Image (cartoon, rainbow, N blue to C red; front, side, top):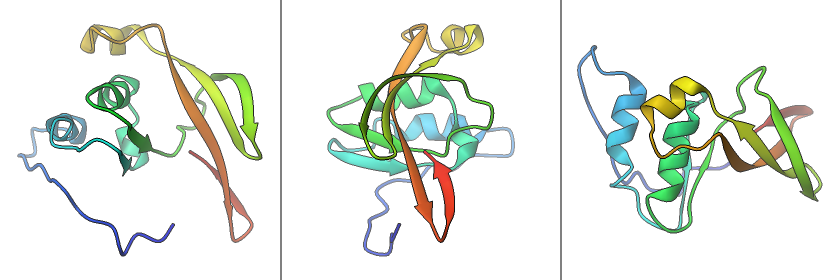
Length: 119
């Protein structure tokens, strides 16, 4: 994905005591509607991602799927494109009170230079 024409809209800084997910939480309200936010796999937190989506209108995110992540395919949307259901953990539901037992997401398989990645 070519990203040179895209705009950095916000940043959060902290000390060594702050986790990256804590800093990412600070960016939820600063992110505009009708956006796609690309995240590193280190931000894989269904609570964080769900909160990101629900904080406004058409707030999308893309993140590599965590190895071993279990999901249920709901339906195929196109080639390499599926609607899936991801189960949340009790720990995530405790930290994120509005988080349900599952999150519905779009799962994309991207192939580049012969190598596949699932996002």
